[in-house]
Amino acid sequence: MSDDWQDAAFSSRHMHNNRGAKSKRATFDVKKTFGSYEVKCPAWQRLDNASSEQASSLELYRLTESKEGVVGVLILPGALRAAVVLSGSRQSLRTTIESIEEDDDDVGEEEEEEEEEYDEPSSPSQLRFETFKKNSFRSPKFWFRWSGSPMVDTTPSSPKTGKLAGSTVDIASGLGYIVFAGNDCQKFKGTINCVQFGWRDVALTGHKIAARSELDVPVAWGKGAIGGFPSLI
Image (cartoon, rainbow, N blue to C red; front, side, top):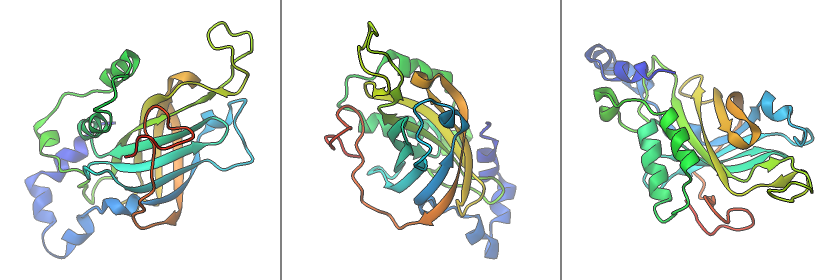
């Protein structure tokens, strides 16, 4: 999806129309994203090890320490439980993740190549773009990266892992984006990628079932995330 709405946000006409009584309506409050969302993902439902007895969800809790990202957890029962970080642009997402992983030397070449595929040239409007500031004419859009351990189907005879079917793999990560239907952040549409499942831009939708105030929940990122919180964001 294009970032043309960023240009509109900084056009003189838009700034003029934002004056007066309408200016409050045009201001996006990122804290509106906080809450619990019921998620639908057809690709997840087609997985053999997907658990239909539990609902999939996206929990958004708070801002990162840098205030440039939103911290949460994505849960696709039987398939993936992952920490997620959302940000208003690819550039700010990259900066936020680099800050979180500054002491982690295990960022794989595959992830770097995936990042490059989604990269776009910087433009003056992107450089001027203030994190999380959206306008009333366009829908709030967030890029995100997830980090977790996908549950994949393997066999006991697998020469690579020797793990049983439905076992977890090492910590992995992937990219995606979500676009909210409006500034109230009640519904969203987007996509998610996961190499382990063969997912590339698979559909992801959700609707808010409960709003919340900022909640200081510890969310693990990177190695050792399962079963403990050695690295908190």
